[in-house]
Each structure stands twice: as C-alpha cells, then as structure tokens.
Length: 474
Image (cartoon, rainbow, N blue to C red):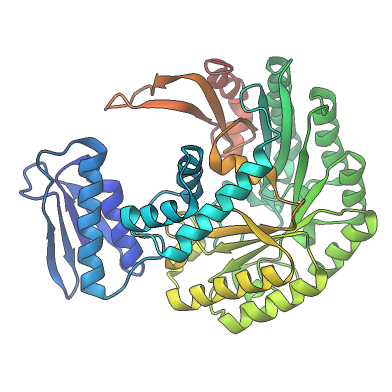
C-alpha cells in the first residue's frame, strides 16, 4: 500500500495520478496534512519515504505544476522509467495541441515545447499535433456558437462486461422498466427540442450501454421521437452504437437505416473467443462477422469497430490476430482503446496484472495495421487508470471520421445530453464563476449531469430538465 500525504488540496489530484501511473499495481491511500513541512510525502513499499519540497513563492497552477514536475523526476530516477504522456494527468492532450496551433505555433516548436514542458515523449507530442491539425479541418464546417450536438443514452446491455463501469445494466434485469425509461427520455428530448429553435443541430450520437438492446418497436419509437423533435437540415453526422452483435438483428439495422442514421458502431473489443468468454460478452466471433455483413448488405457505408488493448490474458500476438480478422472485414474507422480499469467495474476487484510493454506493443501493432488499411488517426483521449498510461485513438478513412467524437473531447460546441448518467455541456457566452467552487473557479463551459441510476432518472425527470433551464442558453 502506498501512503500519500499532501500539504494542500492543490496537489492531491496530480500527486495521486502521477503516483498511480508509475505504480499501477499498488493500492494508494491519500490524506491531507496542512502542517506538513513539504508539498507531498509518499511512502513507497520497499523504497522508504519520498519527500517533495513545496514551491514557496509560487502560487496557483505554477506552484502545482512545479511540484508535479519534481515528483515525476523523482519517480523516473527511482524506477528508471518514463511515461509516454509525461506529467499529463488530464484526458485531452489534443486540446492542448489545438490551443497552441490556434495561437500560431508550428509543429517543430510545439513538439519541442510539449516535450520540455510536460515531459511527453517526442512520438506522443507528434501524434497530438497531427491529430489536432486533422481535427481542425474536420470541425471547420461547424457553427460553434449557434450550433449544437445531441447525445442520447440507452443504459442497457445484453450483459455487463467485467471491465465496464458505465451506468448500464443487463437488459434482463431491467425489461420491466424500459418503456418507463423511454417515457422519461422522450420527455427530456421534447424539452431540448422546445429550447433549440433556430439553432443548428450538427451531430446526433445514440450511445450507452447498447442502444440495440431495445426491441424493434422500442427502437422505432425512440428514432421517431427524434425525427419529430429535431430538424436535420444542418445535420452532418448521425451515429448509433449498434455495439454488441448479440443485440443486432436485420430488422433493427433496417429501422436504423430507414431513419437516416449515417454511421454505426459494431464493437467486437477483441476477436479472441477465449477473451470474449472471460470478460462476460455473451457472443461469438462468428456473431461479429454476421452482424457486420448484415450491416454492409443493408447499405451502411460508415461502420466503426472498437478494440481494447490490454484485456486480461491477451498478448500482442492476440492483438495481431484480431487485427488480421478486422482487416478482412474492412471497417471505415477503428477505435483502439487502452484498457482503463475503473473502481466500479468487476475487473477492478479482480486486479489483473497489466504489462505496460505488452500494451505498448499492442498499440504499435494497431497503429501499423490501421495505416495499412488507410485509416488515419483523427481523435485521441486518455482516461484515469488506463493501462500503461497510454491513450485511446480513433483511426478513420479520410471522409469517415466521427465528428461527435472530436467534439466531446475538444469542447468547442454545446452538447445536449439526454438519459441516465448523461452529461450536458453548455458552451457559455461569457465565463462564469462555478457554483460552489471553493476557489471561485471560472468556466467557459458548464456541465449539467443527470442522475446515473435508472429508477432515479425515471422518477426525477422533471428535476433533470429543471437543472438545464438555468444554463440553456446563457
């Protein structure tokens, strides 16, 4: 057990997450002690106590940054290792790159600055810059201020994967609640429609969970509600996560197609049957190939597939075989995730051993094969507790990039989100002081979260709507 003591709350987030990045297999406990004679004190099993001096005279972000820098250097010296993303503990490296590009910084200057300032590897700095440039080109047609995007959450799945921490449940446990959930969801969608007149809807994303766990009639009801409520005049992209192949039928695919959905995801995560069985996905690799073929036959020409690097007991050879099978199917985009183990997931309690080098090799293989398939990186994000401190990257054909995926990361447009656990992000006209913020933090985007549990969302839907009325459209 690693014990962390911080002098100031300012340091707690970075100290904890830098520590966990270097020592992912160790549990860590953290507490505050204002009387501490240094910024942070870390007790490492078998290594003694590491003390990080405070930065007297510095204030705010600079003080926090210098303490994080010192801590990173101490861990790097102690372990003989470096982290691909250096000091970064946030989830949006490309947002930093985007900001610097908009300020006029060129690639060479950015890479040099990013490596020096955040201790990021040169390879990752170049990747962030390349993706940010591609994102800017993709987002150029959007109206940031007068446009918006819509997220619709369906929190049901055929079964719950062992790595999953989303607010979703097995459909068999919630069948009696689905229609009531749709009642509440349609009510929230109607509210959004009533306050968005005159604004341009640019993207719609129906995710979850697994939206195709809905029956044919329930799926038809939801998509018809969206058709009645929102204008598609300015719509650039309409995505449905078909997700699990064991939830996909030919009739559901036809319903999706008939409602104008332009992009779907069929997500195997792996093409290794032994792994699918191990992580609780109740389908076969043959089901994946069947669902994919059906979607192509019906006419879908923009299909994404998701893979996860670092699943339990998988090797780089397994990833290579998975990608070989994916290559034969030929999706239009491929999203490669590094496994992120959340505390709420079953896998977090089982605590598998994650080998950073193995995950690194998997990511390298995915990058190589994606390039051979003419799929190029177009968005990137990171998560807490991610295997090997790596990243998730979306690869796509030139004209098949997922616009919504970029928007959710770059936060350049308001995203209205309906459903249990959904988070609405409202782009504000002017910065405001965050309500309840101890340090009077200001924000240019306000997040309004719905309750996560399904019964709570159904019972409190009016409250969920009222929460948004304060911020739409300030």
